Length: 368
Ligand code: NAD
Ligand code: IPM
Ligand code: MN
Image 1 (cartoon, rainbow, N blue to C red):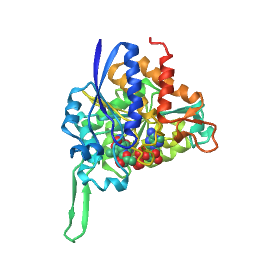
Image 2: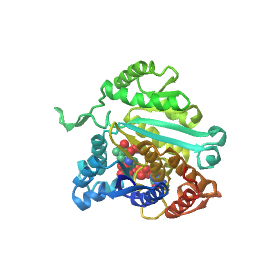
Image 3: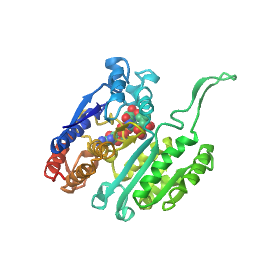
Image 4: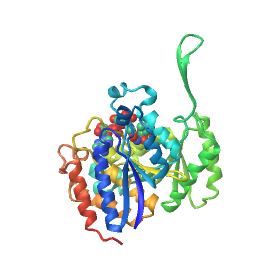
């Protein structure tokens, strides 16, 4: 029997609630396909800081180095709760970024997807949505401002100051662009390059590399767009986008806007891929405002399981089956609270009930 080891980092806030549903779906896929997905949990995030004194304990690091893939739930606390943890031990700086660097998962794929039939979930008007929203945001994940040198202190004038550096070398930029061109080639062959070259030198270098790499993908049309204009265009005409590529910080912000135009961050799964290792996580955070209530949308986590099956284990059909199962639950009129606004006809169900329905749909689908 094929046997894969999957690291499970449930995380904070709604993390454990949505991870539970993701793990159930993964187990069913294993049963259906005669594959053992061994799920090995490790402490990670703010909860690990409180239980182990470290948001990224040794056992989580050891798992990172040995498993076939990792499923990660969101980490982090509310602003007020975060203050109880020393700055460098807060799980974003103390666990998530070190994990991304350790795994070298430089390519972050964040699909922003809403079929026409679910246009009512979006705050955008149906005529703006047109045939639906189907974008893949490709975000550089281990460089830029997030990982540059940082310095804080007091300057000669006695003023507190900070200096943080946006650093990239040409190989880092080329690597992410190649991923974006490759996925573009498999889709509509239109790649939006998102940049800020009217101000940032990093974008000037980025665009130079775009010009070099594009010669290897002559069938892909490149459209250059400044990041601020891209933010507007996402609201006014999302249908123009197919694949968008951008540096780390731009990708952080625009991908959350992606969740906004869909109607909820709960619809945002993601894949974080490196040359040797990969992990999968929702694009959103730990949603402290709704944690512990069994109302979070597990789509993002279950969708991340689908992305893992596709990217790490080449199980495309099962990945597609999971996505079809998720859509089928919505098509039956059900959703979690985030997408069932007042006055809408959506039948509101809990996190675990949504998981139950996805499992039912998936179980009824043929294994190819
Ligand atoms: P958030 O993404 O946690 O929440 C923003 C809004 O979206 C909230 O109203 C929340 O209820 C809603 N939301 C998010 N996911 C949802 C889901 N699955 N179902 C239903 N509603 C959902 O952003 P925030 O509140 O700014 O951040 C909270 C914490 O999460 C912070 O500590 C932040 O650093 C952390 N964070 C972690 C990750 C990660 O682990 N990759 C990503 C983003 C934020
Ligand atoms: C994300 C998150 C992280 C990021 C934080 C929690 C460090 O917002 O995955 O989008 O900024 O990359
Ligand atoms: Mn983010």
